[in-house]
Image (tube, rainbow, N blue to C red; front, side, top):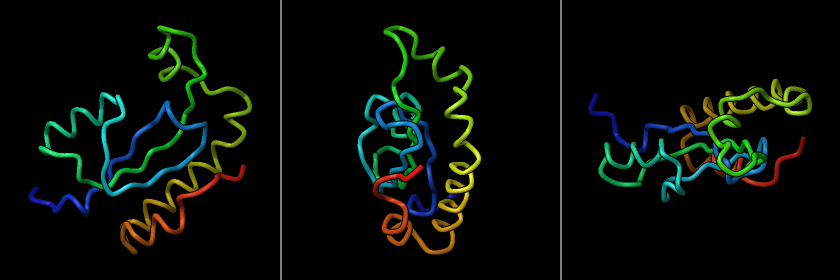
Length: 112
């Protein structure tokens, strides 16, 4: 589509962040995330905005796929509507105000 990389926002789950944590970056490594590895290969570099949504690493060894594709806990379900609302607002902010303003507004400690 010939869209400038800075106008694309990649959204991923992230096992390295606690549940509900949000991180927005302009570039960075894949951090072992297979989806980001694939995107890096397709784009030829790691210089693109990304929104990482923490899902935590609360799984036993070798059970990562089951955890990521499994059900949210009752506690996680309780916070999910608010987190989805914040995520949607973040995406809208990125589209209207740019990556810098979005990072300033949303990066930082999450209060549930």
